[in-house]
Length: 528
Image 1 (cartoon, rainbow, N blue to C red):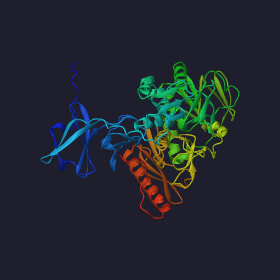
Image 2 (cartoon, rainbow, N blue to C red):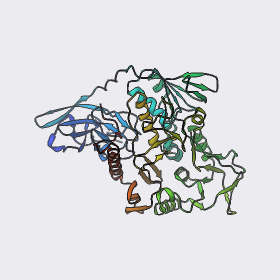
Image 3 (tube, rainbow, N blue to C red):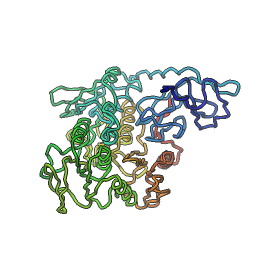
Image 4 (tube, helix red, strand yellow):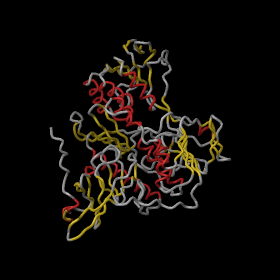
C-alpha cells in the first residue's frame, strides 16, 4: 500500500508568484516545503503566515483581513499580519511567519522569520501580580502578561485540581468521545514553569486584604500583590430535590466532572439531562453520540426560545428528536431515584445517569467579602478595574459598561472571558485599553453548528435569511429596529461580517460620546 504524502496545496511560494495575482486585502494559500502558508497583501506590503488557525485548525483563507490582522472564520480569533501574534482569543499560540521578498514583479517566501522580541519592562509596572482563578480569563491574563514582556512575580491561584482546561471541549468533543483527554488541558505544567508562572492548584482563597495588598489562603499562606485580577468564574446551580445527591447525578464544569461523567456514560444505558439550554443540549447530543438513550427535561415551552427565538429553538428540538432524543418540556424534576426520575407532571422516566445543567451563578462571594462594588456581578469600568484601584475582574463575574446596548452586562461565554483576561492583563500594565469586544460564542450539536455575535437580550424581532432546514442561514436579532445580535448556521463569513458591522456601531457610539471626534474602538490591539 502506498504511503505517499498528499501533494502540497497551491503554488510553491518559495519559487514566487506574481504580485498582481494577489489583490490588496486578499489571501492566497500555497506551500513552502511541507508547510501550508498564506500570503496576504496590504497596500505595497505582503505578509506570509501559517494558513491554519492555531485554535482548532480552521483555514484562515476563509476568514477576513481587518486592518493589519486576519480573523479566523470559525471562532473569530485574530492574528497580527506582521508578526503572527495572537491579538484576540480564543487562539493562544501565534502563527508561524516567513520572510518575504519582492523583486521583478514577483513575491518570494524565504526562510522563517525570527520571533518578535519582547517589550522591555517598564518602571511603572507592578512588581507582583496575583490572579485568583484558573479558568479562561485567568489563564489568558497570565499568558498575556508574559507575552507583553512582564517579568515580575506572577502567581495564579486556582481552586481546581487540574490545570486550566478547554472548557467548551468538555461538553462537545470530549464527552462525545471524538477528542481524547489530552485535548482538555490548555497548557502543560512545563509551559507555565518555562514562563515563570507560579500555578497553585487546589488553592482556596479565603480573604483579600486590599489595605495590605495580600491574598490569604485556607492553608494560612499569604500572597502579596501590587495588582490583583479576580477571575473566579461561575459555579453550577445545584438541583435541590430528593435524590439529587445520588452518585449517578452529575454536573459538568471541571475536567474532573467531565472524566467522571465519561466514566459513567461508558456503563450507563439511559440518561436524563435536566436543562434544555446550551450546556444541556450539547451534553444530550454527546451522549447520543455514545449510544445512550437520552431524555431532556426543561421548564420552557421551546428549547432556548428566549435566546434564539421560537423558530430556531423548534428546529433544534426537531434536530435532537431526529437523532433519537426525547423531550419533556414545561415540567421539572421533583425527585431522583437510583433508576428513574420523577417529573412534576407525574411522569416517571427511566435513568441510570442524570446530568444537571440548569445554569450557573457568578462566584462573587470573595468580591463581596472584600467590599468591591457588586451589581449582578462584580462591577468594573471600561478598563475592567473594580471599585478598588489595582484590583481588576474578568470573565463570568465581571459586569462591564457595554457601548452597544448602553447597559452594564455580564456574559458567561468562554471567548469573552479569554478576551477580558487579555485586556485586563494589558491594563494591569497601564495600557488603558477599553474592553469593547463584541461578544461571541458557538455551539455544536450533532452536525449542527451555530455561531452567535453580539448581545441580544431584550430582542423584539427576528429576521431569518436562508433555510434552517438546510443548516444554511443567518438569523438577525433586532431591538427597536436596531441590530443587536446575529446567529449564523454554517455561514462563517457572515458571522465575521456581522462582527465587523457591530464593531462599527461601537466606534460610532464612542465617537458620539467623545464629542463627535473620529474614534476607533480598540476591539483588538494594534499590531506591533
